[in-house]
Length: 466
Image 1 (cartoon, rainbow, N blue to C red):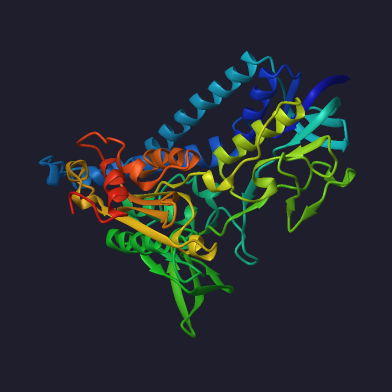
Image 2 (cartoon, rainbow, N blue to C red):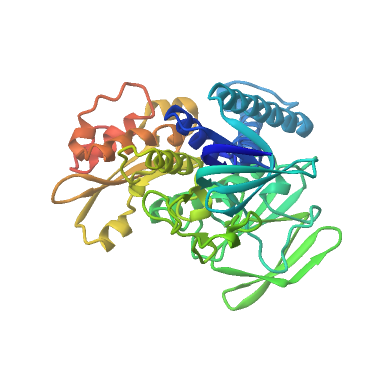
């Protein structure tokens, strides 16, 4: 059986299905090959389910501390089965939405494992069937995503040692957990689990948690995580060969010249993600793979011009919204549309811990390394009325500005709902806005976004409420 398409997309995750919809809008006959469920990691094992759990943890923590709002609830308890059921309900609803969108776009979906046979040819072994289907196409788009990285000797066993994949499927919560890795995923899990009432220890190899964020943000995040009760150890190298399993897990880490023992019920390995570049026939092509990622040009073409790749498989920012925009650029390029390369400095990044973290553009250190003379404006949420109303007054907004032109170079926030606020500053960067243009934007009162206007004023020492 053979079928002809303009583009076949291998991988139906966020990047893959968004690419398919845009390709369909452009009049391209499109097929998606997905061995699991449409929506991929983001919908089923990442962004959405983890945020559903984070929300339940936030509600639980707020209920336990309701007395500060005058709400007394002495018998607050957690039913983790219902927490997981709510997570599944949300992901299933969104999954059906994705199915509907592809059906609406008249996009063919093949549920099975795709394999590139060479430029223009993809075979599909449908799930639960023995026969392969051959798809002929003008272009192939690889959107196979990534999987959790493990450390040798710390492979997931589903009982004592977990990655985020296994953690999302826990049927009951442990009493304590060790988290190896203090990056984005590790800190989100630390925040969630401490709010669920679990004893949490984070062991980070770098000298600070969230090492890719602005240094002031990292410092504040560490302070606030410790304030919540999370134990954080930085500058520590975990020694996998010392892992022991029994009633729980124990492991040692090198810290300040000594081997320090740590123990807990479970251990979560959160040390990044690996691109899925194996198992779908890349060896049948001349596509270049270096350091475990597929090499492309700015329009996501590989060195075989009819094969494109987007998302986590090409490295860079491993974010769902980045994969989506890369996919749109790729299929527009296939269709001969005029399209511009993605400027990755304009991508907003979000961390959904409590408190939240969000950023766009350059950190202060990055701006200085690029030769800018910088000035900064910083404003705390404790001076914002809406933050006090919410009972979440920790954190701040920080803007990094070019001293010569007053153009915004970067924005960094930690505090309540900052992941919903960062887009304003992303737009400001797209428009090359100055700090004064941001300051002259009227921010309604009372809102959390007033902190943005005040931080912009603070660049020139003109903040009003500090």
